[in-house]
Image (tube, rainbow over all chains, first blue to last red; front, side, top):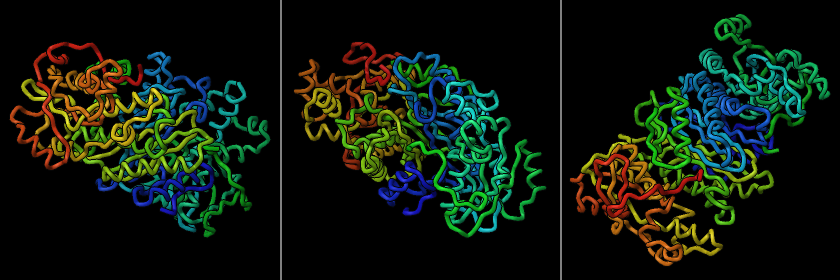
Length: 320
Length: 320
């Protein structure tokens, strides 16, 4: 357990220390999903928490969106493992003075995300507390779990969809502005890439992770877990439309803004070099989502190069 | 989904409304454990949250105890379904200034409870937040899930172990005193009755629930779910030793103090009338835990009588 599948960051340092402390009482900490032991070898499970004031502010999101977003984030972990979602459990903590209709609206958001992921809500727990908090556990099944740790030198690095929209919305919300509607949806009602993850898992993906800590942060996780390096051509990073002005307002190129953004919930995946652009076209035909080749897997364990430069630690850290 | 397996209380009203709102997107809300659909029919799962300031105060518990207690509460739901525990996922929210050693100590407490329940920690999530919060999801397996809803008129009502110790500790802690050591253990490091639940499940238990909302509160849940009545002989309620003085200090008989107490994590179970006191002796020989006959199952749906008197709503409510 001294090795866990995590890159840099205080949250990840904590998790590493926890894994060391628990020793044999813990297994497989650090991946997005856990394989349930002694099952049929196909059951995977993941849990994800969203805390008011850390992951979101009440003023930014409707109650429906808080629930939808929390459930989507958890479903996205199943997507990143190449699995199909099956069932959700929801822990909801809200202040005692919250009207029941808000609790119901939040749970309707959870239910809508579950329905979109072809999963059902099967249980949960409810408590009052000082802030809103939603913890979602998702169970899923996969014929072949794709982990973070399977990338091999010579594989190629790909990413689904576009990046940067969620961060663009976040920047606008944090500065009291109204985000563009498409950016708002990326942030407030992300779509877990479940069909995409299953497609990639069944077509030989060697490693996969959902982009929740930012593309570069998740590249570090994948590189650390696989004990490989990644070399990214930043000019190829697919951008969500309309992020240029906001990126430039915060002093970043659009590509860097998108690559450092968090919570896009796209999939970062390594595929054998035999996976072609024709295969990527077929992916898009089948799923309606783009798949873009953004880099190479190298032998330099743990190193992430962006246009040849080894960048310092970056990516979201909910413990920073 | 208009019928859920819950008694009175604001938390339970919320859950009922949630179940109505979710309609077909939710299944089986209200029981302690959920059966995972499309599995092998033996996988059960439950989730349970402990929030600082609601379920505990930091001053009352060591970090190890906070983790142990949260995990035990979740494991207890598996016990109440007659299942064996298998795996835990832990969501941990702590203030940003908490030293890492406290996070580790909490997770060691979770690990110790997991080990006691022959389960392993397989995943989780970590975030900062304004207060300590631990949400534990437990997966388990059972050859035959025992629900709240299976009690039949003519069955008898039994309870494992003794009651009131956890409440005695809580009263002392709330008034700034040091609880008796045995009471402190009942509150801070409860033992989930896993072997006991499996024994009872395999010997024909018709309905079962772990006592987390207080004996009388959980009697109401069981009666509501089973659409039966329960008639309790309060003089037979098994008491934890040493609670008399504390009960009397708060103006209650020891029996009522124990019957209204929460978070004992004993098992409340209905068994066919053919289950004899010799069978209860065998239970005690096999598990080391007492099993006490405390009442009868009647035809009066939802009614809970204590010594012939229909008592108003009671039991813990973490939303009150």
